[in-house]
Image 1: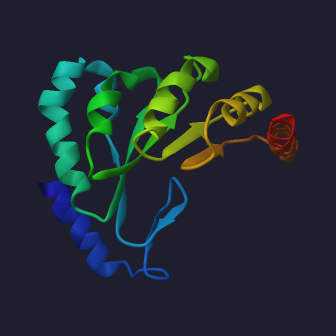
Image 2: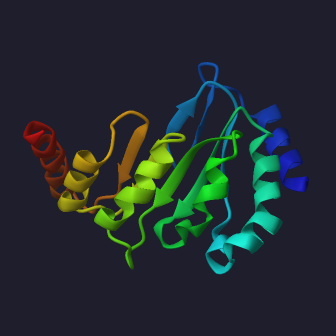
Image 3: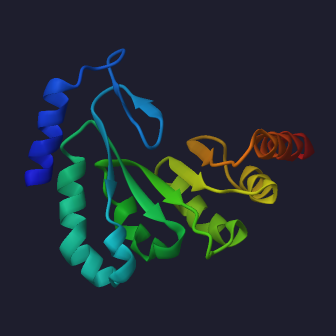
Length: 168
């Protein structure tokens, strides 16, 4: 696979940082070579077509490094089940789409992911979204990366998290 060779070539010239690597779009350091596997075209595929055409490539690509995680979107979680079965994927990252579903509606699939592997949730999340995530998900293996437009928005999210934890 050409992609795998490119990844391996990059790691031949990119030095490790403290024995590991960090993928720039989702700032998570791992103690080994890492990559985010993405297949946004899956939004347009049936689960059967995804399993037939893309899943083998995802599995092969994720075996090229020590730590691979899968980037998905909340609008196409119909591909979730086969991804959960891939031992080569160490985590699932879900970008929450503006068009939905809501965070409350995503709690069930998020819990499903957490029962298999770590979950990374990213997107423009509101204070209510953060409260819902804190109250509805286990903190172990959970990484939430919320994009904010201002310092005030960030402070509001931090306050929502603190309130949600103190209410528990």
